[in-house]
Image (cartoon, rainbow, N blue to C red; front, side, top):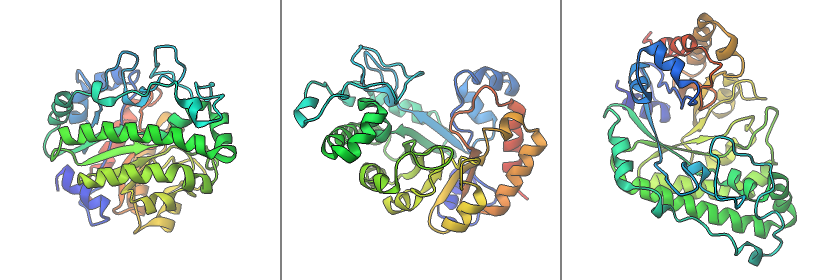
Length: 345
């Protein structure tokens, strides 16, 4: 099997020769050590050297005040969005909004002005044709809505003033639908999958109730999933934390795989997820980045990958349990992960 065949079989929970495996997106501060360890010069070469089945592509978003699609909104009205140090908890520009007209002052960005279709094509065409070409769309409308008000105000508005929360969320979702359409149209026939998501979980459970997930996150997620499926793309849905109570809603929305199985979060161990949801959805992740990849030995990492392969003979993309490899993860442990994941027993 090549990488694409292995991925589609995993998504469909069909037999595979070995698991599909994804590195994720290494944090910029962790890249130099990985480059040195693998003897490569850049992220493109690393993706090819490491044995990754995926070739992930970030959206090219270049606005005067933002350099990333996930940081497109100037919620603090200061003319600059810091994509490296964003927060959801600081008061946003809609903090005092009570009526719909209180939102009218905000100038919503137009993604067509800041996404170059030709650059979209160029980035995707860098991927080898046998790799899984994954668009990192993010489309994090829940997180953006929280930042637009400030998280505490946003969550209070869900209950006390849902109309105003939903109006902001709709604007954000519409922005991402338009941005995704630009990317999907520019790369039609060349993409395999898209990663979208919202962080809804803490270490111990959801940050909001399952009912709030259903009422305020699920509608936007469903639109984004349906859009991706209309282009023939598989959807990997990301949320950190313990999200087990939200998984039924994600399955109902048509998500193809759930990422990243934050291994040490409550009830998110691979065995529990397999027992509850095998046959309904696939997963991506499972190799703990909070302790194991940071403090464990390469042999410890290999043992965990073997365990995951036993629990999920298919239906699991082996990957770190966070999309960003941080600088505290030794490169030798990343190599151990891929050495064991890519073995054909």
